[in-house]
Amino acid sequence: MLKLLKPNPAILHKPGPQVRQEIQACIGCNECLMACPALSEPITIDVLNRETISGEISESVAHFARECYQCGACVSPCPVGLHRDAMMLWLKVRLLRTGERRD
Ligand code: SF4
Ligand code: SF4
Image (cartoon, protein in one colour):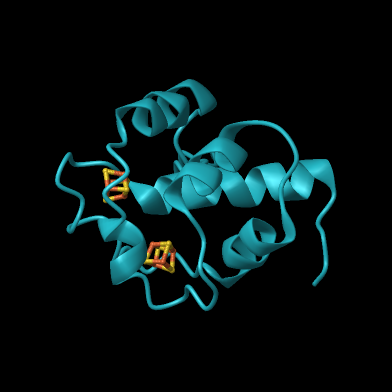
């Protein structure tokens, strides 16, 4: 009998505990945001980090999450090797789970 091969699903984002760990390791230097071509309004890294993992998501952070197109430009400037793109993907998931806000 023909056996259909099912490809392994792509890992689209890091699990929550790993994202949390990366955010705890963030030194708040802001390099990732300075390299981001999608950031259209000022956001502080503290607020972004906090709202990425818990609590209410403010309109400015929700807007940024929608604008992020996963280009990865924020990854190489990070002096401690963190993945802001993966954090943003996690934030997008949170946004969907909590009910997306509209500007
Ligand atoms: S992945 Fe998202 S947050 Fe990172 S630089 Fe690209 S648009 Fe900005
Ligand atoms: S570049 Fe890295 S350490 Fe600096 S704020 Fe962004 S994630 Fe945090």
